[in-house]
Image (cartoon, rainbow, N blue to C red; front, side, top):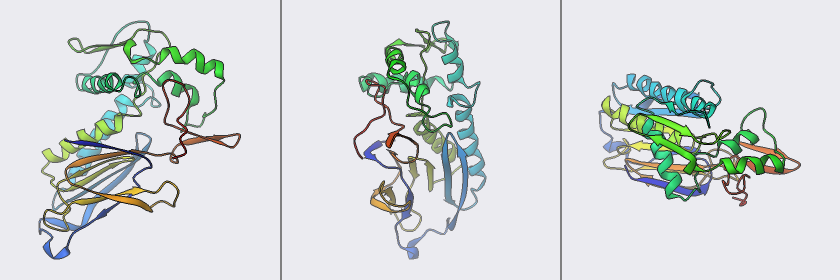
Length: 278
C-alpha cells in the first residue's frame, strides 16, 4: 500500500464522503457500522460500510488491543517495557509477530538518518508530555539523555527474534510508528473478513479501504483539521482510495510551562520538542 505522510502539523479531525446517492451499491449501508474506543493513547474509530460485516469491528479492535499490549510503554509489562528494562544487560526475546515492527522502526531510523529515532525514549521519558507527570526537564537531564538516543545502538537479531539496547538507560519509544503499523494490520484483518469499504481512523493515522460507497469508483475525501480552528474545521481535503494518510498535531498532546507550549514531537538532536509555529 502506497503511503503518504502529510507534512502539516494538524490532526485529521473528520472524514467527509463524496459521491452520488443514486449510484450507491445495494451491498453497502447508508448508516455504517461504527465503533469507538480509547486505545494507544488516542481515540480509535472503525467504520465499516459492507452489509453484514459488523462482526469485523470486533476483529479489528482485537488487533488494536493486541499491538497496544506489546508496544505501549505506559501499560507496564509490554514488549517494549521488557526491552527497555534490559538495556545494557541482555537481549530480550520478542514475539515473532512483533519483530517486523522493530525492523520497520529500525529501517525508518536508518533511512531518515536519525530524524526519526526509535531510541528517542530516553528523552520522551523525561518530558512525559501527554501524561500526568509532564514537565520541562533540566538541561543537565537532557544532556545526560541525548547520548542514549541513537538507533545504531539497537541490535536486532531476526534469526533468534531478539532485541538488545547496548547502553544502560536507553529506551525505545514507538509513539511515532506504532499506530501506523497497527492501522495496516487492522486493514489486513478487515480484508480477511471480507470488508471492502471502510475507514480506519487511529488518531492521526487514517486508512481508507476501497472507494466511497456513496458512488461508483468515488474517492473518499479525507478532511485535514485546521490546527487553529475548532475541531471539525478543515483546512483542506484529500481524495483517496485504498491509501493511508498520516498527520501529527500540535494541539492534541502538549505541555504549557511559563507561557510556552511544548508539543510531543521531538527533535532527537536537541532533546526538545520541535518549535516551528505550525
